[in-house]
Image (cartoon, rainbow, N blue to C red; front, side):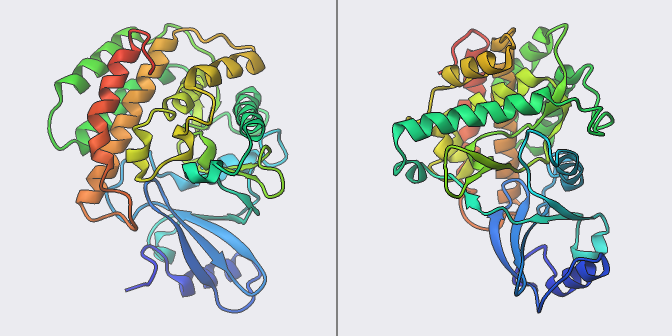
Length: 341
């Protein structure tokens, strides 16, 4: 059995060489992320470093681990106002290492993952960092997706209604028992879908730890990462998801004291207002969008718990996600009434 589940280094090396990627010496690897979303590995040779991402080894939901989508998006965003890693290879042949995977260049920078990572920073640094994170997401929403070749990425018309249906369907696949509150929230969201909405590229999973910050200036975004949830959709759903992640339950979802839940950062409401200011976009139907975000995070949490129970997770920190589900569903119901705390 491989030391690295879901990764066959000799086969990967042959694939890279066959694809024209220079490799100096034997490849080595380290596990960076054990698969709360995708498995992420650092890949090294004697001269270079890359990042490889592939889906978890089991417990997949249909759309949550699409690394090919991630690759196509980041390829299209090269040299735009949104900083991304340089793309190297996309392999959709599962024979190489068990599943589709992507390889991008390593970005030298800082990842702010835990609350402790924020503690050495000044209040001014944290505030400027928050501003630049919001600005990066606003810049993404301003990109002409047709002009960069992403016009076929998704169907922006009807996106929000499909999201409600999608996450209700995901719940049915990963739940361990029925929940009247989930049914109530899903039904309410179905009734409140806005008749009209804007369309843009959406990231779908945007927060501080899904970015790499500049190695010398923590207030600057060097690269936005983790694009597998990205599509064409409603920018307000995207910013609402970023705000939902400020909820304390994210700590249990991620299995660690997440940086993004820290009281040192601006509140969810403050972040939303900063986005509205920099983008010029009104936060119409905000109760709905926040409730949808809480619903989505509750289902994602149940999905993590589902994979954990199936023995399909790698690493630590997966055993607490299931306990966050009731609180997130409750937060979604409260959000419908304008209570976002």
